[in-house]
Length: 418
Ligand code: UDP
Image (cartoon, rainbow, N blue to C red; front, side, top):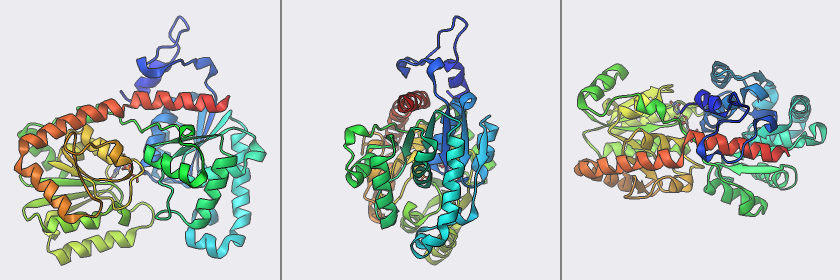
């Protein structure tokens, strides 16, 4: 079910009662608070895809504020969501290094943005912050807006991704200012709990929901359908295709997939995704690496694609090679819903999605030989590959339903607003 269908089900019926999905629990539409959603980026990453159906389900009583413009704004507007962009180039461009070297000169811009966010937040019952920078700016402005702050944590809070200063700021704000944290996985929740000393039971986990309907629309299970789909996407019709989905970034490990490809002579690798947050050099490096490995003819750089279901269904298998623990790994869930066997890196949130040998295969992060072996296993045992894919689709649709996600999240927002 997509978000508009879900909203229709959440609208009051004629008799005034509210039609609810069975798993929605107690929900009173008249008490739904108004929400300001705040996200730092205009790019389309996993956190933004998680916010989209939620904002869409709350269109009548919410607004989204973005701290940078980009395709996410357009996407939200296409779904009927009201969006405002409050960008301040000097703050948007602050990276870890700049903060360290030049914090003082950034202070006026940061204060301006905190005030602007607080002005917006005052018009709503609750402030929902969806990314790290959004959390920091939204929480620092709490004395000005005096609204409860709910933070949707989509990150593994470790030194691999965040600077020392940022971790310290997050530690204190999440402990003393944020009213409620919700995490996208147990893995994310555990790292925040360890960092900030917040008991794990006070960080509920609400995993993302994926709209399975889009995947069901694509017919690619019969050989003819798959060949037609591959022709349409410009992919080789008869090769064994492994698809790796996600932005091109060192920690997503596309370079590991290329190394595996070099050891799997007749396989093709399709890299779907673009460098979203300044990883251009890494993306260029991947092309060079492919040349050096002599696999250029078997790698397809597809760039950012909007139609994930089609691209995933066109594959023989879905590969995931992140070398750092993934906070959740939406692409792994999507690969399973597409009913393709997955080989995924055994760390972080992925361990809450894939059970090795039951609904997919796991390999140690960065273990090229382990990945090669897992792919060989799928190819040598097509019955097993089919069984894993089937089970993956069943498990992922059960555990990551869009309905359950939106309904649990709206309830968490309502509770935080009280
Ligand atoms: N995605 C997409 N087009 C692309 C690459 C990725 O729509 O070309 C989507 C993908 O379907 C998934 C999200 O981007 O829903 C990435 O989420 P994930 O949790 O895997 O990674 P994150 O970006 O949060 O690190």
